[in-house]
Length: 373
Image 1 (cartoon, rainbow, N blue to C red):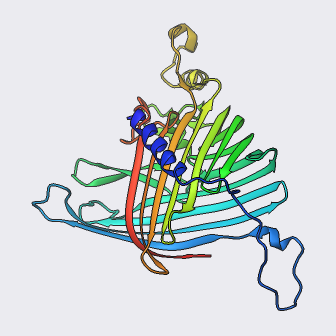
Image 2: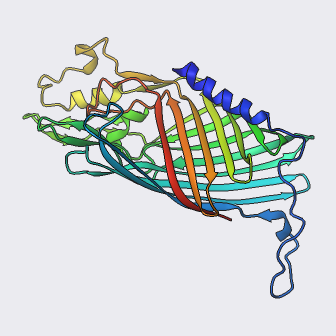
């Protein structure tokens, strides 16, 4: 599956290269609208503020005899993309904010949540470059990404109803990347950023999700003699890693009415990070009512160790195709594949014996309205 994932990303980049030419990525604007006062800021000509806002809707229905699906579903999502880009002589500074949020309703859902979140993400980035050669920029980049609200996985309970298990929240997980590297910009269709020096900070501000995202346990859960829970386990809320980072991007209009966007990015930590829970469990045992004799943890469990190795690396590929039907109406196809070796989500509510990291996938095909500026 991982090979297919990489092949799909590579194919999208090959597709883009067929349209490449030798023009610069960004041309400085030659003029702007004259202000009512007749005065124009000297530097305003070097700034551009492109963006887009939109709303997408999707509906599907499958009857009882259809083998391709079942029931009826309706989804609705909104997005906003804002940019502030500056270029003057050798200096290039790009700033971007992108956010998506949406819901889905299906007659197949059971339990209390018949309307569920199906997309939720935001990304804030800044990239500052200084031109070193014809196609190369020395570049510093910062990027923050997470989501707005809680996310749930739904599992069937003993009553045959869907039961919600929280698997994510605001900055649970979240990430901050700080990178130094080089930006290769051969034309206006394609650019590649390579960084041998990237600090990646992974966040999880919710203790109940700490184990799922590779955070270190600070204190084990405590229980009373009757087995009732006294306090939840406590986790560190941040994990820092140093590694290499790369991203290949294409973002352009193939024709006047057809827009193409693709990105393939990856991060690889230089060293493995061992999350050791032994100290937390030792403290828990020595304070436990079960330890009536006061024996040390090491005496009773000389070989006992609780740890987990987290080698923080991930790959993520995005593809977005947008066809403009009219000035404001469009049809879009969006998909994403992601594999994060550190994310081992608890999908059944269990807090131990975590499943291995899985390939994450989603896709949407929508009819919507949007406005570009």
